[in-house]
Figure (cartoon, rainbow, N blue to C red):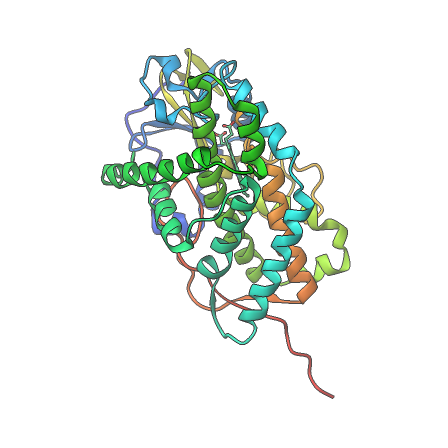
Amino acid sequence: MATRPMTSPAGYDPLDEATLADPYPQLADLRAQTPVAWHEGMECWLITRYEDCMRVLRDHETFARDPRRLGIQVPDAHLSVQVLDPPQQAGVRSLFMTALHAQDLDALQDRLRQMIRELLAQFAARPVVEAMRELAQPVALAAIAGLLGVTPPPLDEWAEISDTIMRSMDAGLNPELTEPGRRARAQLSHLVASWFTTTGQPAGLLGHVRARTAGARPEQAAYVRHTARVMFQGGYSTLTAALGNLLHTLAHHPEILPALRERPGLVHTAVDELVRFDGPVQGTTRLAATDITIGDTAVRRGEKVTVLVAAANRDPQTFVTPDRLVLDRTPNRHLGYGWGTHACLGTVMAQRVLAALVDTLLDTQVLPRPAGPAPRRRTATMRTFARLPLSLKAPTLPTL
Ligand code: HEM
C-alpha cells in the first residue's frame, strides 16, 4: 500500500501560468497516474478520481470539515454552516435552505434578465467590454443582494474587499495574503453586522432568517450571522467567476447559442454542463478524522485531503466524452456544486442567474466574441478571470 511520499507529484503547480490557462490536461495526468497524490507545497492529498472525490464529500464522519474535530482551534468568527459539521450544522443549514426556498426566485430572475438586457443595450455601440468588471460583477452583486434582501454596497469598494478575501484563500501557498485577508474579512463582518442591527421591515432571505432567529441563543445567532457573511461573499465571488467562465466558454464555442436557440428547453441542462465543463470551484478541503485508505493509499488521521472537483468533473470513468460540452448531458451528477452535507446552499440561485444570462443573450441575439487576451486570476481555489475583454453585439444582418 502506498503511503505519503516526500515529494510532490511531478509538475503540478496550481498557480503555474500554463495550469491557470488550462488545468485539465495536468489534472487528467494526475488522475491517470497518481489519483491520490501527496502535494508537499500544499501539504495535502490531492484526490482526482470522481468516485474517490464523491466518497470524501459524502462521508462527513470520516472526512471532517470542522477542524475542531481534530483538536485544531477555530476562531469563533469562522464558525458558519461552511465550517460546522453535522449534527451542529443541521439547524443553521436547514434555516437558510428553508429561507431560500421561501423567496420569489422567478421575480428575482426576471429583474436580473432586465438588468442584463439594459447592460447589453449599453454595450452594443462598444467594440470591447471588460466583461468581468462591467457585466459579471454588477450582475452577481445585484443577484446576491437581491436574494438576501439587502442594499448592495458600492461595487468598487465591495469588489476590492471580495478580491482580497478570495486571494487570501491561497494563504497556504503565499502567507503574505493572510493579513490583508484578515482586514478584508473584518470589513465584511462590519457590513453584515449592520444587516442584523437595522430596524424596519426585513426583506428577502435575511428577513426570513431574522424573523425566525429573534431571541436565539447567542451561539446560534453568531452562526447565523457568519453564514449570512459566507452566503454574501461566497455567493458573490463564485457567481462572478461562474458568469465570467460561462461567457468565455460561449465566446470560444460560438456554436452553443445557435444550438440553444434551436432547442431553448435545453438551457437548464446546458447551464449545468457549463459548470461541469469549467466551473469556478476547483477544489475543497477536508481533514481525515481517522486513518483511512483511499484507493490504495493510506491517509493518516489529521492529514488534509483536497478534493479536486475540476478533475472529478472530467473523469472519463463517469462522464462520456468529458472534454466535450454536451448541452443535453443527462444525468450530469457533476461535483461543481459539491455534494453531501456541505453541498452548495445557493445552487438553485446560481442556476437561475446563469440561465438569466443565457436567456437574455438568446433574446437579444448577442453573441459574445473574444476581444483580447483574457488572463486568469492567480488563485488555486477559484477559477476565474482577472480580465475578460469581449465584444458583446448582435451580428448585423447584411442589407439587401
Ligand atoms: C455557479 C455558482 C456557484 C458554484 C459553482 C458554487 C459551488 C459551491 C461548492 C462546490 C460548494 C461546496 C464546498 C465544499 O464542499 O466544501 C459550495 C458551498 C456553498 N455555497 Fe456555493 N456555489 C455557487 C454559488 C453560490 C451562491 C449564489 C450562493 C449563495 C446564494 C452560495 C452559497 C454557498 C454556501 C453558503 C456554501 C456552504 C454550504 C455548506 O458548507 O453547508 N453558492 N458552493
